[in-house]
Structures are given as C-alpha cells and as structure tokens.
Image 1 (tube, rainbow over the protein chains, first blue to last red):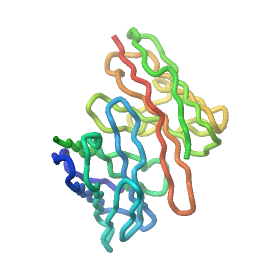
Image 2 (image 1 turned 90 degrees about the vertical axis):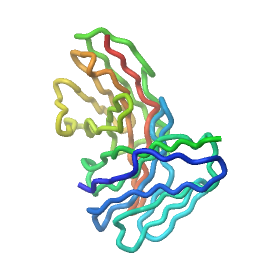
Image 3 (image 1 turned 45 degrees about the vertical axis):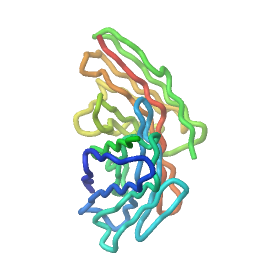
Image 4 (image 1 turned 180 degrees about the vertical axis):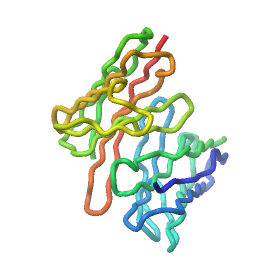
Length: 110
Length: 116
C-alpha cells in the first residue's frame, strides 16, 4: 500500500504561493499521484494528477522528482477561497488501494 | 468527467433503524465506491460496489452492516443498518474514470447522517 504523508496544517496569506509536499516512499511503478481539494460539507474535488516531472493546469502545478517518492502541489497566489483540506493520493493499481491520507488543512489569512 | 448525485443529502435517524443512500451517476462507470468521512477526519473506503456481483468490503466493514446494491452501471445504494450514534458521518459515493494509464476520481456531494 502506497501510504502518503503530508503536513497536518499550513497557514498562508493572500497572494502568496503555497507549496504542500507529500511523501509516498512506497509508490509503485505504475502509480499516478493525484491531489484533491475538499471544502467543508462537500465531497473532494480533483485538482491535478501527474506521473513525473511537472504538470500544470489552470489552478495548480504539481512537481514530482525523478525518484517519485514525493510530490509538491503548488498553488500560485492563493486567496481566501483556497482555504480547504488538500489530499495527496498515490494508489496502487487495484481499487482496494484508493485510500486517503490525513490531508493538509490550508488556511489562507487576509 | 462525471456528475454524481446522492439522496438524501442529510438525515437524522434513530438508533436501531436503517437508512438507504442512493447514488446516481450521469454516465456508465465501471468503478464505483462508497466512502465514510467522520467529523474532522479523512475519507475511509468502505467498499467497492461491483455491478452484478457482491460488493468488495474493506477491513472493518461487513455486508450485514453496510449492504450495497449495484443493479447497473449508473446507480448504487448503500444501506447503513441497525444504526448507532457511532455511524454518524458523511457517506460519499465515488467513481473512477480510466483514461489510458491515468485515472480521475469524482465524488458525490455526500450524505450527512446523524444518529440520535
């Protein structure tokens, strides 16, 4: 099981760039790394997914080093509405491994 | 993408009773799952809902307590049986769409259950 480890919480200020790092030491060769965002009373929402190097979309970037044992979610210029819990997920190929870690509570301050 | 709806969105139930939660997806999907999220906690996978066969349960979850139906590729139900206050939680339906070697996972809005 590719267990993930992330900081429990982070604080930031509006307009700053936020980087959240997740470790997944036992990631398998075929695993993708996926990040989700969850607001209170809502289901998690897909943010970004990557396999290696760098992936960028309209909301975030994902940096994955060559050994793939960690990944960093980068949120550029956060706003108050980015306050949420962010989950890193690195499952194995079977459905049984779709297990979430503890997540990182990001709080954006004015 | 996939759009998932759940009914009911919330309910307050008495201990000893049962509640059935419905999950409807706007497209046919092979992989469908049920999760539980207790207050302030992360998501815990309950089971994989298999179409045409019995659900596959994770450790700590059993069919007698959480019977699941999956009659077709767009619908599933989860029943929380003989409820106790410890079952108070948010229950989420989820689907996974495969695309080449990658995948995307989508979640429903959740059903907030309070057992008194």
